[in-house]
Amino acid sequence: MGEQMMSNRVTVSAVLLGTCLFAAGLVQAKDKRVWSPLETDGIHDPDAPGLELLQWPDEALRAMLPDHPGIGNQVDWLRATSAGQLRPVDALYEVTRVRQRDKDIVMGRTGEMAMVRFPHGSHSREMDCDNCHDQFFVAKAGANHANMFSILAGENCGRCHGAVAFPLTECRRCHTDERGGGTVPGVQAGQGRQYDPVVTR
Image (cartoon, rainbow, N blue to C red):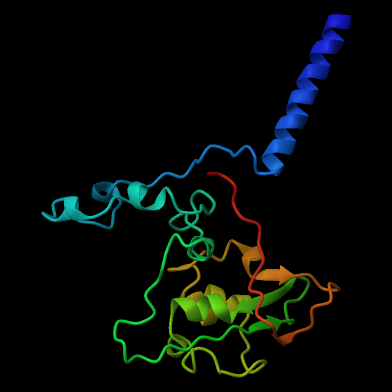
């Protein structure tokens, strides 16, 4: 009986220690991301003569900060850029005027969901303002009436999200500011969205 209790205590202690180390980031879970080879990904022509010249996804993406397995190309591009793993080119030509805006827009008309924080900084570092304004969004806080129905139909944010940016199943990537937490809707200092990193590396 005493040996069984001691064994149970050791097991519980090991589980608690492992949980604490994992939560502290000292022990990381196995990287479960898998990428299809180019010749079987359904995108590339397997008979193309230049296929072997392309960089393989596993080789190119494995070292990047991870996103959840199965989400897009499984890389957290914003964190990878912030960590210096990527250095996007601002413009192809030196004469191009590069515009960046670091203000966030907090949208409060979100029903019971947390408010949406739109980070201009991360978007304007990746693309020019003309990609969105004024074709898809009027450049004035409160003047746009995006909702999940239009976004799911590929309008507004749905032009990119769900196509070339993280999918719409990742609700907490946008709905980040809880009500009653001191944030008010409108233009805010640019802190950007705050969401938990994926720790499977």
